[in-house]
Length: 143
Image 1 (spheres, rainbow, N blue to C red):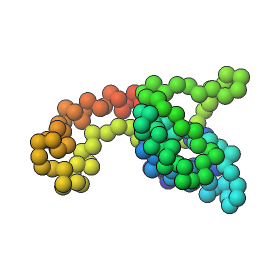
Image 2 (image 1 turned 180 degrees about the vertical axis):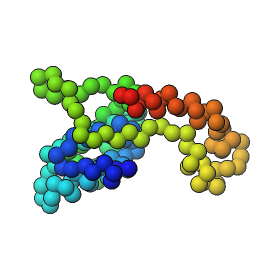
Image 3 (image 1 turned 45 degrees about the vertical axis):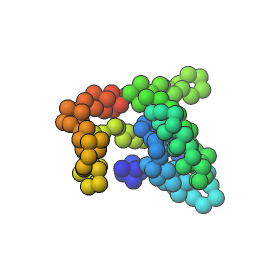
Image 4 (image 1 turned 180 degrees about the horizontal axis):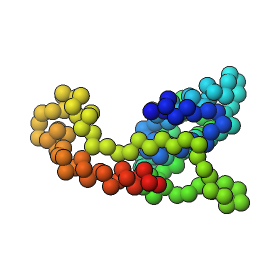
């Protein structure tokens, strides 16, 4: 998905559900590559994690890279606050990536080791649980 956004060095980019950071690091790489060798991007990448622990993990992963264009926030994506520039103007993003929480059934199908036992994710997964995430996904998308 990050490749499809066509991020450039001067874009304002929001990654709403960033942690643990793989897609965020891809976006940052794209911004650095577009800026050219020895140059810093003039844009900004705002990476939001839903919990402090996950946002901290994102920061640790980002330390291994040049990160002058990265701002990490910690907020529920459903209620993400409006970011304002100087003089109170709302910041408008050029690109937004929202990898909303999902049911995880695709991951479960791939991982055969998790299919057995009482406490395996397969024993806890239900269609009702999967559909229960739909309102959360819609709120993230509408925000």
